[in-house]
Length: 228
Image 1 (tube, rainbow, N blue to C red):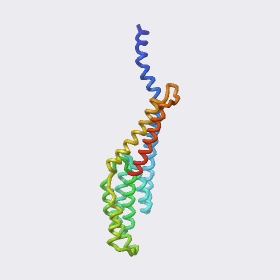
Image 2: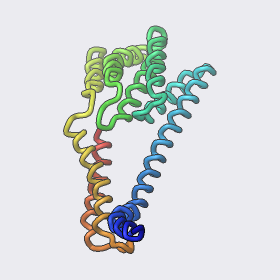
Image 3: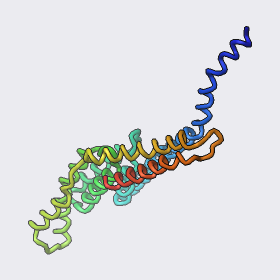
Image 4: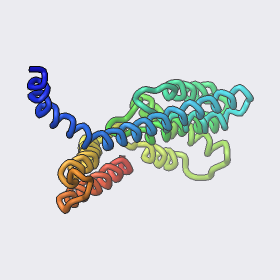
């Protein structure tokens, strides 16, 4: 009786066991890659923020601004310090605006470039980016005047305003391209493994179209991120 129950259970368990054996290595590889990306981004952000705080405490605001910018460039959905870095750059700009427009402009430009570099499907802290775009032309005009720039002020201001008139945010079509490229990349790899390899792990011709889809998806994803 016990033997018959064991025998009846075995065929039902075989597809699940075979499926797990087939997918355990790709899933493990994906988990390792994601863990490495998460760990690298978090480690770099924490390190840059610590260096920024130390530089500011040592009376080196320019170096601190550069490190706060790097903190923003490693923005992640889970943080942990990009919000603090954005607030610090805005604080430095506000404190320096009256007497040190060069430093204020440097801080706002670092805020702007760090936020732009961190966007993907959306623009993090779009309100701060819009504020930096609005304030930078006036600050840069003051810097030019302090340095004895002989260009016409009205024309220079118009040029600076045009330079910082870039729309804030990620266009919907570009976000769609990023998402489609990412899905095609990972989906192509998954389907290549599912359809293009036999039980012994040997690659079949059926894997080639899916591998091509993965390569094209990666190219689309990377290109769309670059355009963003």
